[in-house]
Image 1: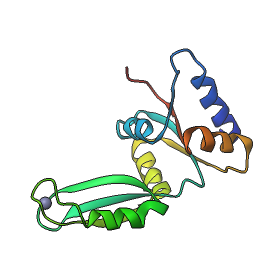
Image 2: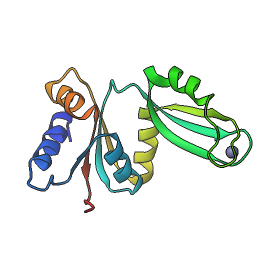
Image 3: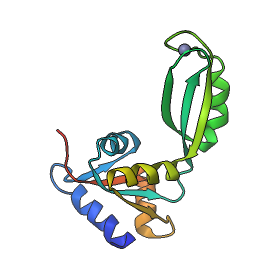
Amino acid sequence: MKEKEVIQRFFKELTKEDGGLAAYGEKEVMRYLQMGAVDTLIITDNINMSRITIRCNNCEFTEEMNIKNDELLKFEENLKTKACPECGGMLYIDNKEDIIEYFARLCEESGTELKIVSTDTEEGSQIYKAFRGIAAILRYRLD
Ligand SMILES: [Zn+2]
């Protein structure tokens, strides 16, 4: 499907009474992605985020999260003042990946179609403004 058609389908789902098969926003979409419940993932090309892995220098604790690129430095500074929740050890960023690469990998694993849309188009711009650049058409929906 073309960019425009995918976005139109998303909005069509969204306007259904119960929200149809549309999901949006980072948290909700991530949850459905991790369950393999996303049919098509729509991302705008300007989201500028990274997927980071935090590790403890003392135990096996690890945590992954998405973070805006322009907040990365501040986050790294803050991390120095925090202790590992498991053992009190020091935390550090072990791995950093562009979020679009991360999504591409996740989509491949779950057979999800990934559409990266430009915000130069009206549809793409709508996705960015209304949903911060992350939206999805689901295979099924959870209550
Ligand atoms: Zn630890």
